Length: 97
Image (cartoon, rainbow, N blue to C red; front, side):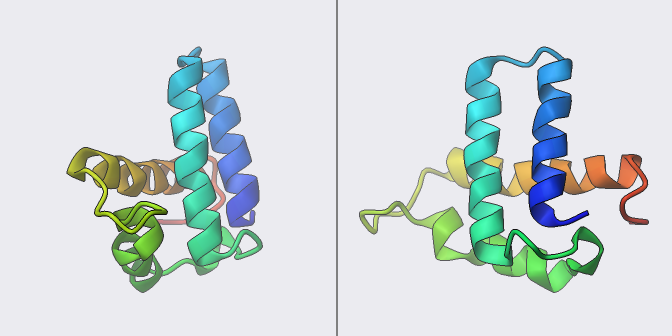
């Protein structure tokens, strides 16, 4: 799976779990940040802890488009959503850990 394929599959699982539209949209935006920073065509199995740290510290995660620091809950959600998508990929057998 690529990161984009993982994101799409994870979002579909949220729809199946009947999560709210606003939750799905927010998670989709966070996963768009992940594909922007890490590359949508990156194989999910090739993402390393260093890549996750790079994402966590990236300007896309921590700063608004106008250059202001994002609110901590927003930063935390972006980081959490990538982690949840990776855990989902693991549960689907796409990655080992």
